[in-house]
Length: 177
Image (tube, rainbow, N blue to C red):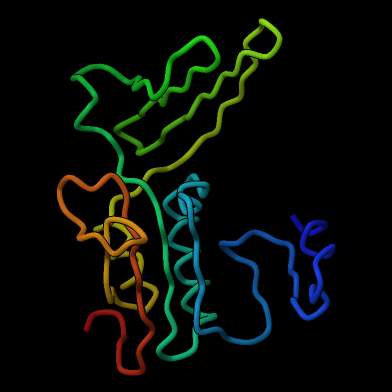
């Protein structure tokens, strides 16, 4: 990604820091910090997710926002006692998730038919509920400003499969208020 960035015109004015997004500190403060496409779930422990919120809040200017886009776990589709939810099955690919409900862990498996043989990989995640993210935000000193079901600002409802949540750093907001 950094090589692609550096190949673009104007890349020399974009600062690049390599590190763990939950803990890496940079100089300055920002109006926007964001994690899109389920990035928060790549932090596979609650402690790491909490630290990410603290780090994001520490880098926000007053009035700045921390935005997360992530999925809602599909536990309603999971029959009692089962752990596997398929997503796509056909001759060219199959994808499924393995849920560990007690620990909020999920392993996503992806297999592709390459020259007649299936090749695959798996990725671990820690899924997180919107209410849990709100608590992490509160612990970090930021508060929920808005939440939508998608980037088109569709209302967030019980039927939403994802959410875009916006937390704001305000001058007067402190944990416990």
